Amino acid sequence: MDKIEIRDEHDVVLARTAARDVAGAQGFSVMAKTRIATAVSELARNVFLHGDGGYMEYEVLREGNKIGIHCRFVDQGPGIPNIEQAMQDGFSSIATLGHGLPGARRLVDDFKIHSEPGRGVRVEIIKWN
Ligand SMILES: Nc1ncnc2c1ncn2[C@@H]1O[C@H](COP(=O)(O)OP(=O)(O)OP(=O)(O)O)[C@@H](O)[C@H]1O
Ligand SMILES: [Mg+2]
Image (cartoon, rainbow, N blue to C red):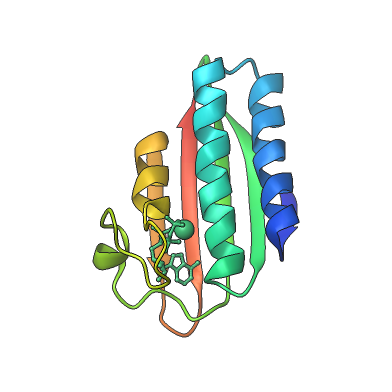
């Protein structure tokens, strides 16, 4: 897996660009490319904004003739005490839109989020072309 450290806003752009470029190189449609890039951007932003920084790992998946991209976001910040609440549209602890997590979930094919309070958050997404 390739890895990108996420410490600041610039790293969010790097993560977004990496996802878009890998998707492009694998022949993803413009729509699929934009969707994965946007989801990555939101999740990477949460890593640095809420999770005190962390990293994204990503890889290309092949299943038969399907091609996908798998990304994993890991931080060791405060974690999310109530994931169900955090996944609701419009929930934010910092008075922004609170659309990042539910928006990202809608943009990809597979979305898993795991958090142990006090030990950070791990999010895994898969987008198939
Ligand atoms: N990596 C994380 N670590 C700790 N808390 C998180 C993390 N990601 C999300 N959260 C919590 O979940 C809430 C919802 O996240 P979401 O991305 O949906 O909205 P937001 O980041 O507050 O606003 P937006 O993404 O719309 O700018 C956040 O306000 C925060 O409390
Ligand atoms: Mg967010």
